[in-house]
Image 1: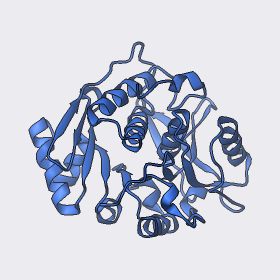
Image 2 (image 1 turned 180 degrees about the vertical axis):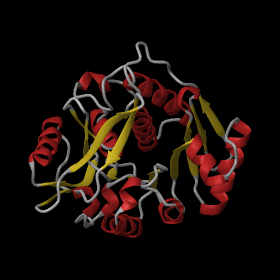
Image 3 (image 1 turned 135 degrees about the horizontal axis):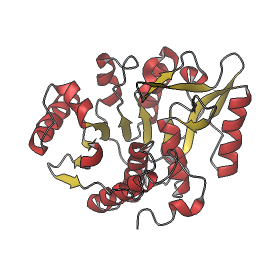
Image 4 (image 1 turned 60 degrees about the vertical axis):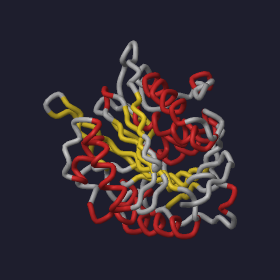
Length: 298
């Protein structure tokens, strides 16, 4: 396993995009960007590695990051490819998401970093692996950085192929996915804690993953560590419930923050649950009010 640097600067790679709604609203997001935004709010100075277009949307991304105080040194700009976007439509009353292809984040180049020792973790998700250029960059960072890895696996057809799993998660320090995704990967019905443990053991044996974060929506989460311990984390019910967008990203943000700062895992899991519930009381996945992030780990 990679040696953890106690630095407070995680390296976050992946998509930055706008969710575009039928009423004309555009909401800035993308799971890696949400995680980076939240970590910055908590004071962990993440470095975001992504790509935006030289367009109005790209300028909005840059302006938002600058105003929030985020590092922009590893943000790339492309002249010939637009900034990421998702077209959100309603089908039968339920939202449907079209993650538009051939966007700037499909062409992320390896960052120019001479010394990776200033970073604590490398975070990335599986969605960014959909394009060969960004996939190549992920493979390069895994090899060159030697950083502990926090991998957020998102089994979202058509932007997922099981052949990617070995490269993305092999010897990862943490793997996050939900119980439905775990069931799909293992063929084990994850309808009980015992079955979740069995499925986790199957993935750990196959890919040498150390630790797992398995989320189960309203049923909470399960943290499985490489020493055999398992921590069940109860869900924090939001009051009022506004929307659930970004709850999983919020949970991942706090878990990563707790790991970097060396907090006890039980304490971190409870804090992550509280923050995910807080996110559900908010419109969207992030907040630009600094007070929203006060004492998250307390």
